[in-house]
Length: 483
Image (tube, rainbow, N blue to C red):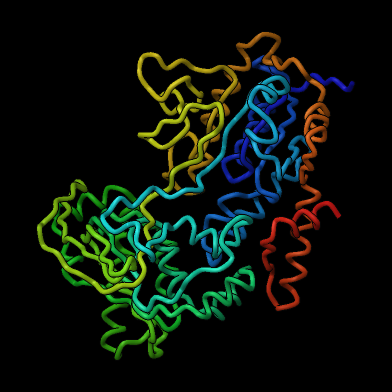
């Protein structure tokens, strides 16, 4: 038995939240460990249910995001740390239980992210042709258990949502397949699907006004450069009062977003004046309408299929309060995509806060509690949450770093108060988890295994003059990783 005296931490989820937290834990322990009586050594075992790491970066963001390659390579550098051990293809709650982890680890951190859509909840949302963004994103990102084909036969489509996921979905629906293939790692089935896409008209519906949208400037700039696409706006949406302009100016990111939207307004005017062109002045064969202050109220159907969408005009005050006007308009569409938020994953044995859509934790400090809220909520020792698992589906990838620092600070504080300098797990043999998984026939994919998958994807991409080409079949991933 090779018992060790290092701290042992289990992290569930190898997306940005899990990887950043692992990195920050080791750094902070190195800085503060002696002072806290913890020492400076820890082993972190990172468990991921998918055969490959990186979660949201690989499977939750559109493939044409330029920043994604940069983030993925930063995460990979972190994983190439001898104190971080990757266990992909291991599902928490199925392959290993909470009690088994607590027996072997001093603390368990949940960084499980989100894979489900919030329900649309409108009349007609069960019609054939209504899709949640999450499933569509899984398709175009090649999620291992996602759909392999997607019905793209609607000529007129609607996208509901005022955030970055709605922008991603709308952009991919308006994309030129060859342009996308040239710039990204999309697999063949996605290329063929987008090539056959019949969408000619897209309506993006945002419930609030120009100054209350939640888009990043990066998303807006990507929207501006769609070959063959004419952007069309409603002038009235941009008639902002002084109070709204003043309020928007208080926050730097909001101000930048509003400025970029006004750039888009000018572009849209130029596109129309030039005879319905795209951003380069070429004839546009697709039209992308952006509707602010527009709240969909019903999906219209015939024979069980989508035929249109009914939308109510709204008004938004400077403080972001939305009121309905009682004015309605109907648009013919044959497909509706909703991107109104994700529902972060539940975890077996951990209470879930349904109202806030995250794992139950104390006042947002990441310490897991016995119930969602109320006086009876007790902190459960040695259990923590970070990222969307902690705060719900809000914030960008960068937000997970500040989250991680808060959680790690709390973890170190708690460990320093625990007996024997935080070393409370009964089984301290680092190979114990490997034996347990082997006894169940579970074959984890480690960092070296992931590197084999990555090398294959790069080689396949190189054949087509691309940097990378995604493998999507989980069995192929396993075969490559274990070869």
